[in-house]
Image (cartoon, rainbow over all chains, first blue to last red):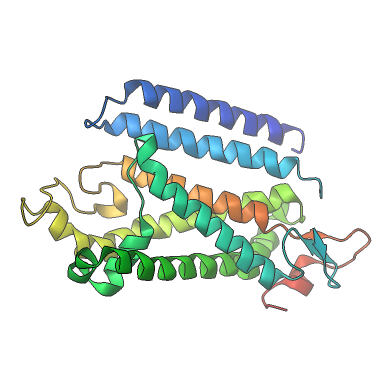
Length: 63
Length: 211
């Protein structure tokens, strides 16, 4: 569990990056908005923040 | 890193209460500022300061006095954020450690996971109750009314925040992003760990109660 957790977090981070990139590509220029594009951007950023936060907790020197 | 005489050490402060208040304030501020910047990432802007202001001052007063609305709403919003953080630290954090065995040990990773779970809980509360039941009836008529009296949006605030004005489900997912930012910061900053050699348990000596 302890060794697999960083791999899972890395996977989540990667999924977040892919979703963010995909959302940014399909999002039309302003002032138009795309429900799918913005949804992917929001989900991608959520996964990225979760993944980055995990590594910050994992690297905590007080552990 | 500060150690207390209770057998625990905290990233901030010497006891659970102080650590919770400061951690929750920082988490609230980071999430609030991020929400105001969401527009730059092509996401719906989340301005909880103004939404709280409209709730207590009313739309008419809020539109006429935007600075006062933002300031009063901000005080209410930050107070709410700190109180939710204290509830997390003193009640949810020890309780989930008791019910979910893998999260029992006080490690930074477990503390972080608890913060993320708390963020998801608050996202559900916000999307299921606060937004549709309080903001919906208040802002919905203005959002959907045709111009010039309203914005002419196709939706007010949908159930479980399934839509908001001109936005669809991305409003709900952006709300998840906002609360994830809050939960991540809270979980990282409120991180009690055992002082080496201590025999204390989180439940028995640092559970519900501010010391």
